[in-house]
Length: 153
Image (cartoon, rainbow, N blue to C red; front, top):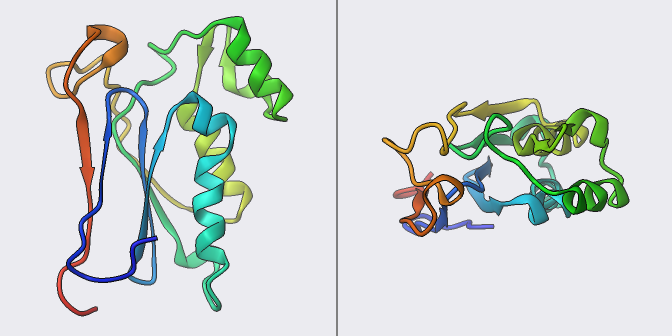
């Protein structure tokens, strides 16, 4: 968690979900690929907020940035098996060989009672004119999520 002003953490992605979680002038930036999603990284970040005395799920806002969407995200059967072993509802998250990472993360977030979830709704693989997509382009640049607070709250 970043708690002080004038600090601007950054994460870089090229299809994975960039997730920003904010509560009480504190933030958490997460890079959620299929492994992090399988391991519930979004829920782990929110749990850190909820450990702060007085912070409730209503105080947390989550933003999901541009990422690869289920329209373009094909995975092998081993990924489905790992999600199933980790206790995810694979019937809801997979359509054939397509994994919905956004839905998987949204479910983790909502299970903790957080309802303020904003989603950019853009697919990096569909919109390579705007974003980098490792899956579609191979070696490529990275999309950056930079966030911070300036000055005193």
